[in-house]
Structures are given as C-alpha cells and as structure tokens.
Amino acid sequence: MYALLISLQSEFYKSRKTLAFWASILLPLVICAMVAFGFYTKSEAILKFHYSPQLLWITYSGSALGVMGILILPFYTIFMAFSVNNIEHKNDTWKTLFAQPLGKLSIYTAKYLYAVFLIFICLFLFAGFTYASGHLLQILVPEYKFSDYSAVDLLSKFYAKLFLSSLGILSVQFIISLIWGDFLKPMGIGFVGVIIGIIAASKGWEYAYMIPYSQPALALTMKKSAGGSDFFTQDIYASLIYAVVLFVIGYFIVARKSIK
Amino acid sequence: MSELAIETRGLTYHFGNQKVVDNLSLQIAQGSIYGFLGPNGAGKTTTIKILLNLLKSPADSVFIFGKEINANRIASLRRMGALVEQPAIYAHLSGKENLYNRCILLGTPRSRAKEMLALVGLTEAADKKAGKYSLGMKQRLGIALALLADPELLLLDEPTNGLDPNGIIEIRNLMIELTSKHNKTILVSSHLLSEIERVATHVGIINKGQLLFQGTIDELQTMNKPVVEIETDIVEQTLSILQGAGYHPEHLAGEPIRIPYSSKAETGRINTMLVQSGITVSSIHLVRKDLEHLFLDITKPN
Image 1 (spheres, rainbow over the protein chains, first blue to last red):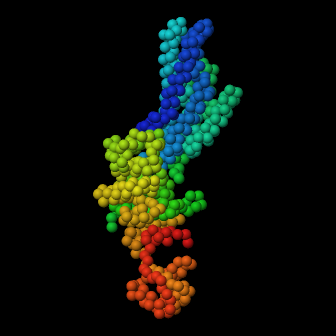
Image 2 (image 1 turned 180 degrees about the vertical axis):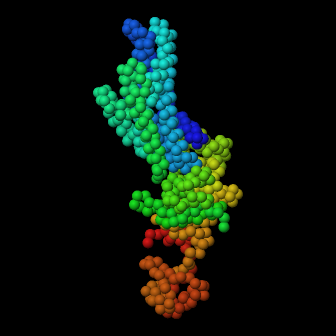
Image 3 (image 1 turned 45 degrees about the vertical axis):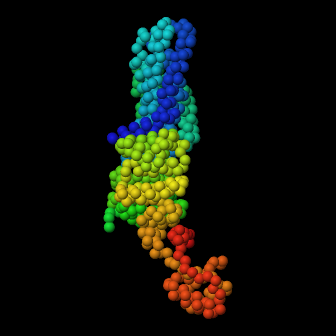
C-alpha cells in the first residue's frame, strides 16, 4: 500500500508540468467559460423560451455535456491513457522505473489510478465550473432563474455517470498505450474506435453498449430517455466490467513485460 | 572468501531464437570493482538487465548477495543502484526534480539529492531542464540517480560514455573512493579495457554471450605470453633455420617473425645461430602485448 501511495505521488510529481495534467484543468475551464459566455451574450434569445429553472439547468449543462459525451471525453480519455504511459516510453524510463525496489503491481496500479484520477478531476471540474458559472450568470443576468433550482444532484449524477462510462475506453486505451510506445497506434486505434462508437450509439444498435467507445454517449442518451431514474444502466455495467477485466489483463502484461 | 555480491550460475538467455547470454557464470566478490568487458553487442547490457530483473532469468541462475533474484526481487533491488545504457531521465523535469522524483520513490530525504548533485558537479545546472543537458551531464545525472539510495552494489553500464577526459578521471576516482572508503561493490561495463584497467580489481571478458575470461587484473597479465620478434633480410631461409633448430616460428606477411620468448640467453643463442648461418638480423627484441591487444585477441572472432 505504501508503495502504491509513493508511486502515485511520483506520478503526480512527474506529470504536474505536462500538458496532460493541465489539460484536465484547462479543458473544463475553457469549455465552461465558452458556454457561459454564449449564455451571457445570447441571454435575450434564451430568456424568450421561458425555461423552468430545472430545464434551464439541463439546457445549460447539456451544452457542455453533449459535446463532452460524444467527442471530447472519449478523445480526452484516449489522450490521458496515452500520456501517462508515454512519459515513460518517451524518456526510456521503464527500465529505471521497474528497477526500483517497488512491486510491479504498485507501479502499474499507480499509473492506472493516476489516469483515472485525471479523468475524475476533469469531470469534477466540469461539474463545478458549470455550477459556479450558472450562479455567476444569475448575478450578471438577473432575469435567469438558475438560483431557483439546486443543480447539485443533476450535475453530480450526469458527470458521475459520464465518469464511470469512460472507464471502459480508458482500460482499452491504457493497455494499447502500455504496449506501444508510439503516438500513432493508440491514437489511430482510438480514433477509429470513437467513430465506430459514435455510429453505433447514434444508430441505436442494440448491442452498442458493448462498445467501450459508445458508452459515454449512451450514458447520456439513456439517462435522458430513462428520465433520470436509472443510474446503473447496461452501458455503465459494461464499462465497469471492461475496466476490471482489462486492468487484470494489463497487470499480467506488465508482470511479463521484458524491458529490452 | 567473502560472500559474493553477484553470482550467476550457468545463466543462459534468449531473445527469440537468438542466444544472447550463453552459460554465463559470474562471480563478483563484495568490495571489488569488477570490469565487465566486451565488444558492442557482446551481451553486457542484457546481463545487467537480467541482474536488475528487468529481463526474467531462469530460476536459480542469478543470486544477489546470495539470494535468488526472482524470489527476492524487491529486497535485491533495494541493495542495488544502476545506470543502464543511456541514462533514463525525464527530459521535461530539471536535474534536481529528477532526483526529487527518485527521492519520493525511494523514501530518501531531499537533502540527499542536493549532496548527489554536488558530488557529480551538477549543482549549478540543477534547475536546468534535463532534456537540455549535454550527454556528459546526463551521464552524471544518471550516476547521481544510481547513487541516490546509497546502495551497496552499483551496476554501471558504460558510465563514462560521453564524458570528457576530466569527467572520465572523476568517475574513476569516484569508483575507487566508493569501494575503498564506503565498501561498495561496483560492476562497471565497458568496451574499452584501457578505460577500466586502472580501477578494476577484477575483470570479466564476454563475447557473443560467453564469458571468455574471469579473474584479477594480474591473472589477466599472466595470460599475456611474451614473444621475440625477429626481422631479417631473407625471411624464408630464416624460417627454415628456426624450424630446423626445433623452434615454432609464426610469420604473417609484412610482419616480423615471432617465436615464444623463454629467456634472454635463449634470445642471444637464436641471434648467434642466425648470424652464423649468414643471415643479416636487422632487429631482434622482446615484445609483450599490452592489455588492450590481449583483450582484442581474446574477443576476436574465430
């Protein structure tokens, strides 16, 4: 356990000056700021719809969530899985990392958990920035009714679901990035995966929930169709099963990995 | 005899079908500086990676301080520090941050990182990005990383690669100090004998994965058989006279005739015999190969 903690601490120390780490903070900040800016400048047009406070929050958060679920989250996840491993590939540091007196399981788990953590931080900040910017808009445009509804439950449900739905993609991409040190393979496979995922999800294929790349998009659409009642839907279970199985497979790959 | 720091017993390792290490039995005593010599591609780095358990060795073939490595991986690694091939450092972090990161992993206080920077002469460049370091500076940082945990056993894979002459001398002195004052054991690999013959107490020579020689530097010297080189005006006749007198001369085109040296008196007798046979001897003298040539002879492809 101690080895896992220091490995995690080291992952943070190594990556804190990299784009991957800052992307998890800047991405939600920039997207939320853009959406908020749109709602600020187009406030008159939006107010004409006379949204109820709840619907206003759904519309507002949906602007960020829509693109997130379909495009940005899958790509962001692919990039995180890549960068956590690439830091070792690029610097040829696998050999020193595995020559430290630490268990291989701890080193591997720390890397995986750190990638999970980066996705968590990103989505947590998305929820936080959406909440904060909604209330900021309320101050700037008093006609909005953001303050008449507590969006904490709504936002935390949406983003928690999105978080769980991303673990499947993360696990697939994590293994690909672990095995191959180059940029093209993980990104290329990921890109094709995302496109297949989008098509399968948007065409409503009945087994689309089995495709990790479809799961974030499904997590959101099913949420809407189910009226917010179901949290643990098929796609979430599928994503979690992928995560557990592939995490275990990844460990065996690491344990047998020869550092040439 | 003290406990061995490193012992391999008939170690064999394959990359696919290719045998890279062949029945290797290293014995490295504690407190020694073991020069691990061989041409490029001889299997040195592979062996070092096996000793670090980066490449998995067959059971009961590698022992670190008497303990089998696969069964005692973490305990063994705790006693070792290593520099393998080009130093592995995070290019986006400064030299100091590279050491701090290792401090986190090893539970070493950060003050130790500063001591190591001073030891390898990188204090002034401590805050510069390691990616912008020269090859020599990277090598020094790699050595600092290897020494950080104050390990009992150091594995240094061509540590003077890329260093200027001053740097090479500094590393040499550092190795001597570490073994003599701090009782460390060092395995240092090189493809140049001249680089380590002055510091190494023991030498292992490897080629094509096989250990061709293992022993002290003195033992290596005794393998070095002196010869008498003779230059005359008529080579063919000289050879037949020598053969007729029971010697076994060797001759390669364009080179002097060589016969094994036995004593000064014997050399004198050969000279007299040749002169009395009407041969003009322009040169006859004793030659002892330097270690470098001996090394080349040992490792030359047959």
